[in-house]
Length: 216
Image (cartoon, helix red, strand yellow):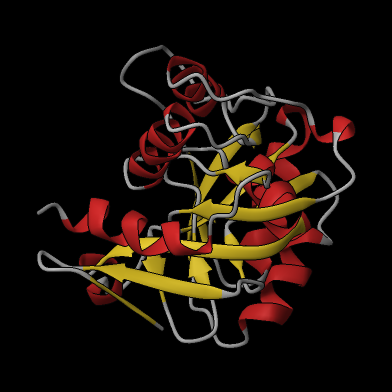
């Protein structure tokens, strides 16, 4: 069986009827969205806050009600993927949804990271920084001062920079992470930065394999 699907099946045991869910973005968590849709067909009820347009469209296809963050007083459970997992942090942002993901994931009472084993073996991954288009040159200079090698993300589907769901630019930064929590805060203190892809606040990491899943 697919390791990504097994990771999401491992997360299903934390699901309770009536929960407000935070739905992440990406190929792994999309399995979770389909599983939630199956539970709704059995009569269970959930409302969900989506972290991207892609997630919102898939949730609606599964009959899952989508609400905005200002319509809920709390998020019971957020489930999201990651691009790389270390002991005390995970890196996200490959899909460009990191800012909305961090808002939803950090607001949730419980945040589960679902991954396949390959994300544990990744040696390195860029720190993704979302910034205001107006400020990107200044942000790049500040990041270089921190020892990073930032690169403005461009896409194959359009000419010019990739634009996030929030209308911002994305910088892929080659940089060494020594103190993840401090670096997360330091990057966010740069004027013009909206958010970065270092996530240091999560409840559990669920690792999917071909035969099942385990928790870290």
